[in-house]
Length: 219
DNA sequence: GCGACAG
DNA sequence: ATCTTGTCGC
Image 1 (cartoon, rainbow, N blue to C red):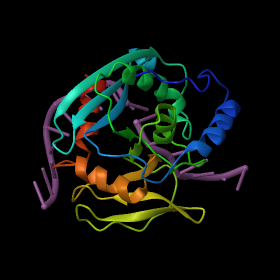
Image 2: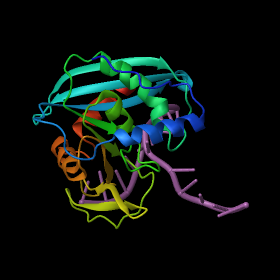
Image 3: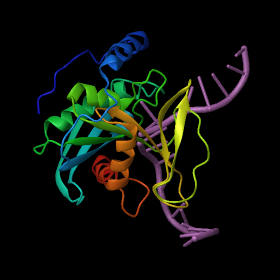
Image 4: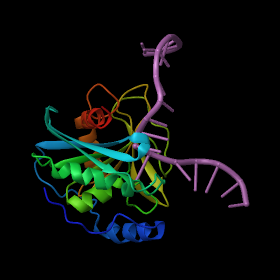
C-alpha cells in the first residue's frame, strides 16, 4: 500500500499542534465502510535504549480472528514521548509496516486514543486520516475525560466525557480487569467501534489484534 | 501556580 | 514504552 505523505515528521511542538488542528477537520466519526473481512492490530515497541522504533501490524480474518498476514518495520526514533503527541513518535514506523502488508485490512485497531484527545486527534485519527482506513482507538489507560465507574461485567461500558461532549467509551472487556478506553479514530462511530472491539476480544482483556501485534513488536 | 498526562 | 520473579485471586 502506498501512503500519501501529508506532512513532515521532524517538527517543533508548535508545528505539531498546527498539523493536528488541520488534520482533525478530515476526521469522520460516522460509519463509512463496507464488509469487514480483515482487521489489523497495530503496536509499537522500542529497541537499543529507545533509539530505534519497531512497529508491527498483524492482520487477522474477521470474525474468525486467525492471523493471516503480518509486517514489521524499524526506524530511528526521532520524537520523544509527550502526552498529546504520541502519533508523531509512533506513526512513521507504523506507516512503514503497513506498506509491507500484503492483505490490506478493512479496519485498524490502534494502541492509544482516537478522538479522546485534547485536540480530538489521537494516534488512531492520525493513522486513519493518513491511510484513509477506518480506525479505532483502543487505549489501556485514560488520557483525558471523565466517566462513571463501569459495572464489572464483560461488555458493559460508560461514556467518556470532556468539555460537554462524548468522546469515547470506557469498556469492560473482561471481569476483574481494568477497562479499555475506546474512541473513534476515523470513518467509524463510537457505537460501531465498541461492537468491533468486542468482536475482536475473546477470553483476554485486550483484543486479539492487539495481542498479536504486541507479540510481534516485542519479540 | 498546581496537578494530570495514550505509549 | 522499559527494567523483571514470584505471587495473589477468581
